[in-house]
Image 1 (cartoon, helix red, strand yellow):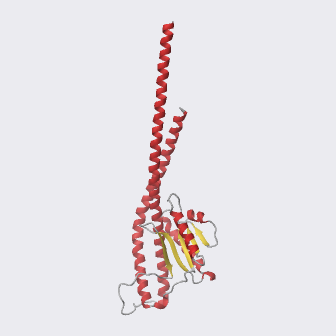
Image 2: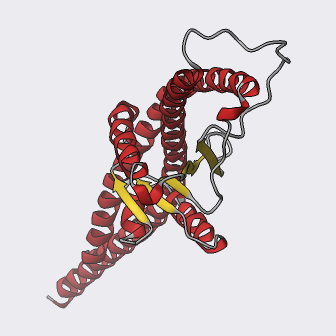
Image 3: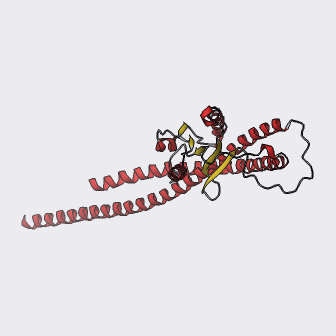
Length: 285
């Protein structure tokens, strides 16, 4: 009886866990749907800014520049929550690879407390902050991130550093190395302009404003893309876990039924044995 009760308690516990996992899977799916629309609009915005920047730099080549490959500040975007497979582990492995491949290790800004806890305290990590758990938190995360990045790049020892992002890309889920500042690796202009576009601002003022708009839009895109991939992996992870729970529950139910059958058999045998003893007593009497 005690063994059957233990199995029953385990079945109840698995049912509770399955309920929690199902809720987490549902929330992940809901976030993916919300983020799909946000990412689509953000992609169009970034593409428009990149096209304008490409045309501007084609006419004003004096503003084109690229940082030294050994002088780069990387924004590493991980997860704020767990239960998303190897999402953070793959980022950490790529970070380690980048630090080893370069003669001078890059500097890092880490977004996402789960990832930051895995990295720990390192000299190359300039700042670590919380990430977004849901889409509504992205604007606040972006505000803190841009403030910290501006503060870090304003330091004299980081003068001339470029800014790039390392994050999970939407769709493939692969890790993307994306240069951000200075503006580089832009798509080629679709048409050759016979003369520069007429500006209402001085070129340097226009370039400064364009850079600010681009950084804001591109970082928004990076954070949304990372969060969507995280939720996609969490939904997949929860789905696999639920299947394993179903298999474990099925085995336990089989064991429970077998135990119950054994107990019923024992009860029947006791009844039959008792009935036989009664008959013998009656004959003896």
